[in-house]
Amino acid sequence: MKKYIFSALAIAAMMVSCNNAAPKMDEQPVAGEASASGMKIAYVEVDSLMTQYTFAKDYSVTLEKKSNNARNTLTQKGNQLQAAVNNFQQKLNNNGFQSREQAASVQNAIQRQQNDLQTLQARLETELANETAKFNEALRDSLQNFLKAYNKDKKYDIILSKAGDNILFADKKYDITQDVINGLNKRYKPGTAKKADEKKAEDKKEEKK
Image 1 (cartoon, helix red, strand yellow):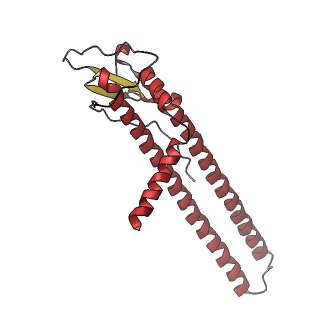
Image 2 (tube, rainbow, N blue to C red):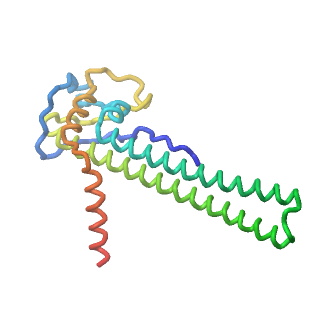
Image 3 (cartoon, rainbow, N blue to C red):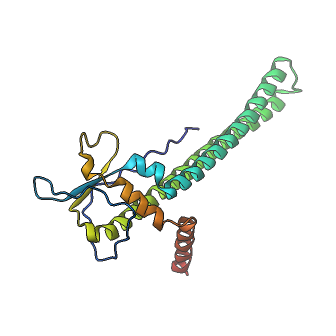
């Protein structure tokens, strides 16, 4: 099974401005000066966001546990399959089967076991991919909703994401990462994502009625 690596969320550059109340921050960034074009810009370090935003850290632990559980399950099933193959081969070499039909029956059982393992692997990979996608969507929504409120007073024209070398150079005076992380962590309540998922599930049930 492929090991999933949960990369930092690539957050598109966004225009942010709305009428929601802006949360107060403990720290105020130096960023906010107008650029040469007259636009007020800022950026957020995505790597720092992923390692310091409590929601992202909590969800990453959950994803890692699910990944480990899936890998352990597949390893166990794989070992069982290998043992069956080895036993079959040993009996075949030692003429341990009473008839060709008996050997063919065991061989077919092993083939079904192998097919079941492949099906299980595909299902676990799909479940993990879906869970990762759900995390990315929740993280994106959380950040965008926060920035809309945050930007009422800040009034940035553009807030960019900085991940790796997608921005080759940016003056630190435009960096609002820590301020955003502080604000996100103040808003975050453990279990919020789970409650949101439960509400979505209830809404879907109501739609089917």
